[in-house]
Length: 301
Ligand code: MG
Image (cartoon, rainbow, N blue to C red; front, top):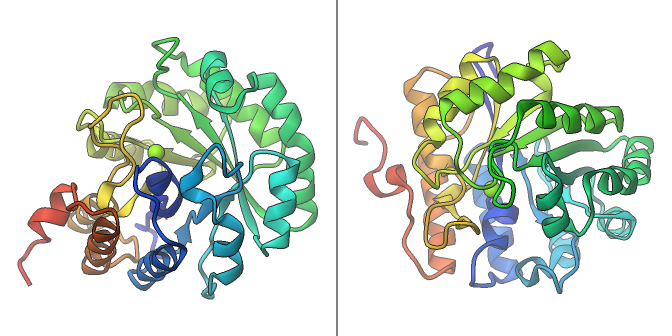
C-alpha cells in the first residue's frame, strides 16, 4: 500500500448477510469470501459467533471458520459477543475479533441486551484473552451518528465509548452510522472530536450506510480528516434494519470506483469486486443494487 493507500474492510459476509432474509449456504459463503480475497481485499469480516437463535443467517459460524482456507496476508475478523462466543472463536482458529457496543444506551440495550457500562465490563475478559493470544481487536461503536431510539447523538458520547474501548486494548474503532443518517457535517463533528480527545486517525475505521445516499460524501469527508480505513459490503448487501427496503451498507464496488478515480490505492480490483457482488446477488436471488455494480467501471474495458 502506498502513502496514498486506503484500506477497505469488507463486511459483506457478516454484516451484509446477517441482514438478508435468504440464508446462504456455507459453501457459497466460502466461495464469496474466496472471490473477495481474489479481488484484493485483505480484511474480510467473515461471520459472527452470536447465538444461532439470534442470527440464523450466521448459524454456521463454527463450520465456516473451520473450513475457511486462510490466505497469507488476509485477516478474517469475526464478531464475538461474550466469553462463550470467544471460546467458540478460539476453537475455530480465529485470530481477529470484533466487540460491539453503542454510543447510546437505548440502542445498546435493544441490540445486545446490555447497557454500555455492562457491555464494556463483559468485554474486558474477552479483550484480555484476545490480547494474551495476540489477536487483533476491533471495537464497534454503533449509533455514532444517530440513534433510532434517541435521535441525535453527541460527539462526546462517541468519544467517551471510543476511549473506553481503547482502554480495553482494541486496535481499531469501527465508528458506525447504524441508521444511515450521517452527512459530511456530522462526520466533521464526530470524527473531528477525536482530535481533541487524542485518538489518532489510524485507530479509526468508518462504517457508513448508503440508506440516504450520503455514504460516499461521508467517505470523502473522513478522508480529509485523515481516516484511512472504510467498511463496505460487496453488492451493497444488508438492508437497513431501520428503513425497510432501503439500501444498507456502502457497496464495496462503489467505494473502489471512487478511490480509484481519486488516485487512492486500495489494492482492490474493481472487476473482481463486481464479480463477487454478482455471485452473492445470485445466492440471494436478486440483482446487485449498487450503482457501479450495475453501470460498471470507467473507462469501459
Ligand atoms: Mg452495516
